[in-house]
Length: 327
Image 1 (spheres, rainbow, N blue to C red):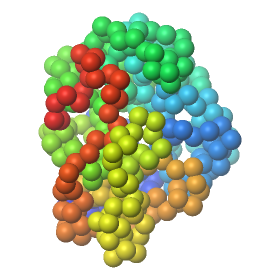
Image 2 (tube, helix red, strand yellow; image 1 turned 90 degrees about the vertical axis):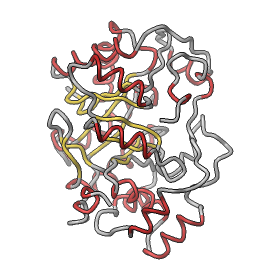
Image 3 (cartoon, one colour; image 1 turned 30 degrees about the vertical axis):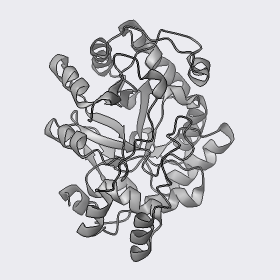
Image 4 (cartoon, helix red, strand yellow; image 1 turned 45 degrees about the vertical axis):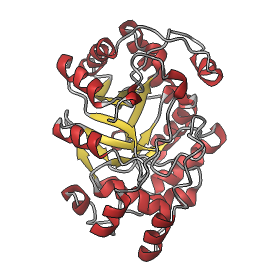
């Protein structure tokens, strides 16, 4: 069991538990994913999350809802919390990997979110697409065109954003260990975070260990199984209904979702579950005042077989596609 996991049980407030990133920014262990949230849900969701202690919100330009997030954020920061209390993440989409396009993409995100800076900005995927102003439609229709932009050049443009004070920390998402190593060889500012799919069907032990050796914090997306995700591998069974997860939940008198979230926190991994339901948002935050046993952690970390849920098969022929190697 990680020391981080042990130390995260001193009280039940989600906002108190986290860790410092490479450049000194405090990142809460628990965040709320915003993918697929609709405009009419946004204020209720953010209000419920803030009331439950969330201060970390994970966004991305490709979600197509950053403007709606911004409206909700503005109302909340005008009345409930200060901007400085929040940890806001967004991600650079694949069609803006050319170094000249990185800053304009960030400025658009900042404008839509109604923010002056981001706490964390990630390169969403290693693959670059040809620049398009209609990238949301092309993404939905699957008509994207691959570009020759390389993430090493993109990274150098990301570093400039830190130096300008537009973002506090920068990182990667969906990169494999070889690609991260390439970034490390050219980086003036090291990646602070790697965001990856992770859950008991895909525990990612080797990649997480690699990141720890390089002082990169790992964030797990899809921790509950990504049941609504468009590019989901339909062969994967329901994680929330897996008998092993359910049995552990029943022993602890917790929900399966709480068990899956606690699994990550207890091994020192940041986790960003998504929900639009106020009750579930609150339940998902109640993971800091109890412990999974070592036996529970052993079971959850060693499911067989393993399954990757988010494959992005349409990009499998891209030379920078990350999932052709084990980690």
